[in-house]
Image (tube, rainbow, N blue to C red):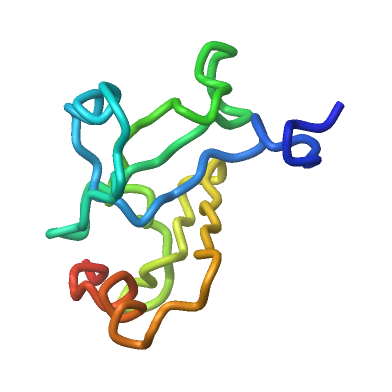
Length: 120
C-alpha cells in the first residue's frame, strides 16, 4: 500500500547518501521543532546515510536509520580523480532527492552544492 504521500516501495532497496555531514549525536535534533536540521559538511567523510537497504537487518529498514559513509566505498572506482558520486563498493547505496517548494536564488543554491568538501 502507498505511504501518506502516495508513494510505493520507498524503504529497503537502497540506503540514501545525504548532503549532511554525519554526526553521531544527531539525536540532539529530536527534542522540539527544528527549522533547518541540515549539518553542513566540513570534510568529505563521513556523510550521513539514511534509511535501510537490502543488505541490512529488518530493524534498519526505516527512513530514520542512520550510518556514516566511508571512503572505502569508492575503492574500485577506476576514475582519477575518483568521482564524488560513484560508490563502487556500496551496492546498497543510492541518494536522497530533496527539492525546495520554491526555486531558491542562485546564491542559496551555491550554499548547498558548492561546499568545497566533496573531493577526496
